[in-house]
Image: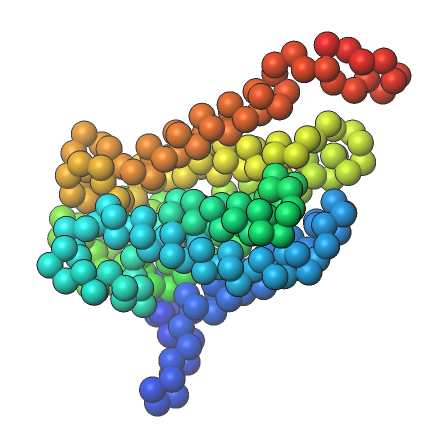
Length: 281
């Protein structure tokens, strides 16, 4: 059984260090170290990634907040200034991915760099960062799933339970499921990256990015089906009308986008290099 010790690491007077912030900072630093290491192997200047980092974090945070506020506008329509109070919670990973991607596109245009090779070395780091950052949900007692009695069940305080489940105590630790899944996605991308650098796999620019979109989204689709705090296209959480959960719809769209990208890279009968030096179709 899992039980959260609470959101605070330490508090000294007005100063409070929270687990969520500490984990996000750790995820950013660990992700930077991994991305720069992969970038060196692809001939990308580490300074290029280091300079991008603060812009990428800003773009991801802004995108995550705008995405959440857009689909929860009923909470903010009467007091739109509260939409700026990000410290009160309310961000969405798909918004962060979109904001980060747009920031990277703009950065590559500014620095006259190729977008896909840079994105390919960033996304394994993003998957690792997601795996670390998800533990912030554990300490905040949020982003949990349906009631369960499994051995790894998560105890949720009454103040954090939806009204429909006040009589329940134990829930699916969906943060844990997604953290483990993201570690697996990171491991998959690193394995493919290693095969590509050793010329054991043809890995054109963009292939790792497409693989990330498909792998991450497949896990998010089924995990989102368990969660009690979804963003709904229609209706209200925890049960969206017609089962229309935005994260699941976005996951399906990203799986399709990643699949189309891989088909374009590998499946259009394009001339592929043959080890013998003779092109084959």
